Image 1 (tube, rainbow, N blue to C red):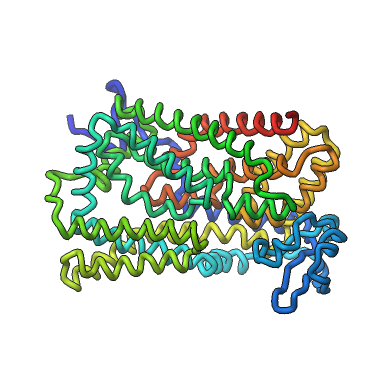
Image 2: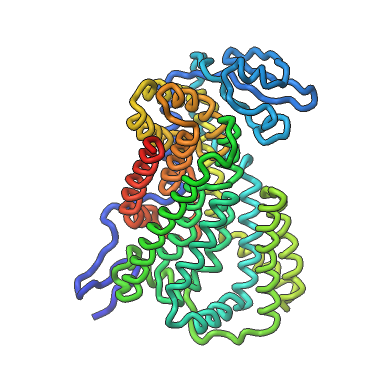
Length: 515
């Protein structure tokens, strides 16, 4: 009897295991559905804005933009912030730590509706690509480097060598890589940068007997856990504590405890799943994609000889990551410098790879093209936020939830604060942007019911971290697009852990309020 392809069906205990009856939409389609939802909201949710404060360094003043569009200037002093009800320290504005406009508590006003119609809907993804061009260029240049290394056979040869070293101890891959990525997330907000790891680590995990989902979990979930339980991440905890007017050291012990517990739970979850898949591949949630995934990422035939040009080229590629991490940690590089690193890497690879110039360029451009879908996902995801911002309803959503939780008991308040930040994290998919917009509003509400600012910041961190596991406007669709795995399979895999993490975060917050 002819075998059906793995993509169409697989056998589990002799019985066919077929694809989902309802095909889940691709990443781009999901994002357009979310865009449509956001556009509809701009027609039904009342438009409104808080007055925003921003420091103007050239004039050494605070510029305040009111909801009606009028502006005024105030002295850049602590007295001005205190008068406006903003608890942040003035030094955080003067030294540039807080650079985004800060919402002023108690200033929300209704404004004229600005619904996003057909033209605005069509322009949103285009503008989203414009605004995300720094990340998109990074993805393209990374793809070019990987295309050349794949053509050389360097990655295949390296994976074969690594597999021989780790044979019998494959579980070390999960532990070591997860801890490294978690450390990056909790210290400097390692997130988008992890896209670069999939083409490198997928062949390693496949060769070790794991499936694609194990690799995705280690990389994506590791970064989510690290950023959700940020300890010194300047883009999350740094901005949030400054917006609240407290030291980053306050609440540090709670953050380390949460990080340790969250890491152990997520690591145990992934290791249990990975062990189950290695013993019985049919237990994989992407088993019906096994043939296609292994064709793309697995080692085919005899591994090529690990030649000197391969070793030198891989060393250049590896050093680029070292430089990248150094620049992010030591000099707060953003994607312009990060992309420049891989541009330099590309130039050096042209001399070390041993390929003819024409072949090199063909493979390089082909590698860039392989990541086109990832680049488009990044740009279209930004379109959702553009529709909400231009529709003037982001502040309304914040105002509604801040009013809904005011005056509750401390325990109920902090649990509801977690729920609020999960929802806000979906609509405002930027850790620093969410902190600057919401913490000045939420911190006074917490003080009124006896909840500390550190607990408010923990709720902010846990909430926006939780929603990052599944929100289409975040990094998950771009990550799945890298390895061509449907969102439905990721959701099936992560749902039990998501429920566990929600309960854990709620318990951590209650403990922080009561102790």
